[in-house]
Image 1 (spheres, protein in one colour):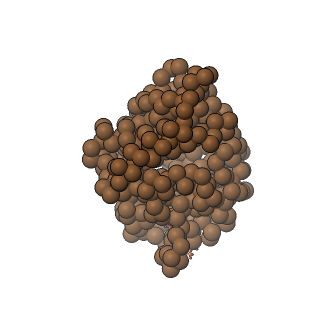
Image 2 (tube, protein in one colour):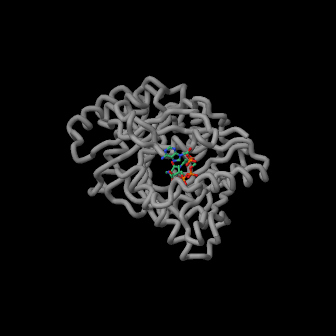
Image 3 (cartoon, protein in one colour):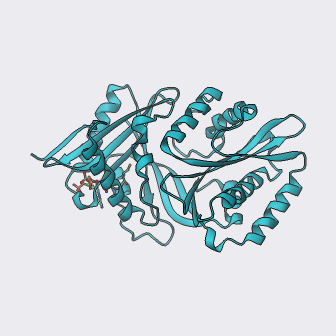
Amino acid sequence: MGISVTPLDPADRPTLDAVHRTAVAAQAVDEPDLPPPCRRRFEAPLWHPMPGIDIRWSVARLDGVPVGWIRLYLHTLDNTENASVELVVDPAYRRRGVGRALHEHGLTVLREHGGKRMVGSTVTALPGEEHRELPGAAFAAAVGARPALADVRRRLDVTTLDRSRLAALLAGARAAAAGYRAVRWRDHVPEEHVADVAHLEGRLLLDAPLGELAWEQEQMDAERIRGVERALDGRGIRRYNVGAVHEASGRLVAWSQLSFDASSVQHAWQQITIVDPEHRGHRLGLLCKAENLAYALTHEPELRVIDTYNAAENTHMIAINEQLGFRPAAGSTDWQLTL
Ligand SMILES: CC(C)(COP(=O)(O)OP(=O)(O)OC[C@H]1O[C@@H](n2cnc3c(N)ncnc32)[C@H](O)[C@@H]1OP(=O)(O)O)[C@@H](O)C(=O)NCCC(=O)NCCS
């Protein structure tokens, strides 16, 4: 029978189970220090899509058995020529052409939609890890993708967090941020700040280093932010947020978010942190991040580990993360394939 690739049928639970098992098996080999992919989050794109994303999920079978999958995220509101991609093959069935078959299928879907670029990320080496086997990077190069942006995943080991140092950092940031006040919220941004959050999120891609990635600014507004919140709610993702309000104008000008998958109490992701360019230099990035860490710790007593990705060249953000105790855990590369 050989290899076949067909769209995933959302009603086909056994295949969905098998596909999730391959994701768990792959992660245990490729990034063993991360928790297994949360089942609820994994399948949620089928039921709770993100606004502006049309997901195409297909499964590869080897002699009828599901052994790999591709998810192509077609962007419909902005970046309409771009697709983000995840492509995973069960470690027990690698180097048999399954990855290549999935990739060819993805290219066909992309072409049908008039897309021009595919972007995906793989684990790469940190300094000193040059001899590590990196199947994702070898595969990406083999299919003709180019490395477009170097990232580093940094990790904070909360069990060794120096809480008095965190308190001192926070006190220093509060002192430097006179004229601003911190506001906290859990899953849904208060109505009075939603337009400012949309503004900050929308300009993220103007500010974050993008390397060679051809990615344009996202069209964000309050409605899309609420749509993202609904999709995250559907995924069961718990969020902690701290923003900084500029007291003279009442505007929310900085914001940081931490998130927990439904299956995690020990692990969290440090997500976005952004400060409006007109309000930089007041330690608002550190203020929001440190305050949010303290906020999450009071509600998530079992938290042990926080991971975050930064572009390797994002020196300001990395400096803040290093101050808080984050240290490099893995290299990561964003690859771009242009048709
Ligand atoms: C990357 C991955 C999808 C490859 O799946 P696969 O089924 O083994 O891929 P294929 O057998 O089709 O390999 C195609 C080519 O990629 C290259 N390649 C793949 N794995 C490789 C490895 N471990 N070392 C060197 N080259 C490799 C080879 O050139 C290979 O061709 P060849 O076998 O004829 O030499 C799989 O290793 C995986 O799931 N990795 C984790 C997730 C990931 O990084 N995905 C990719 C980006 S989104």
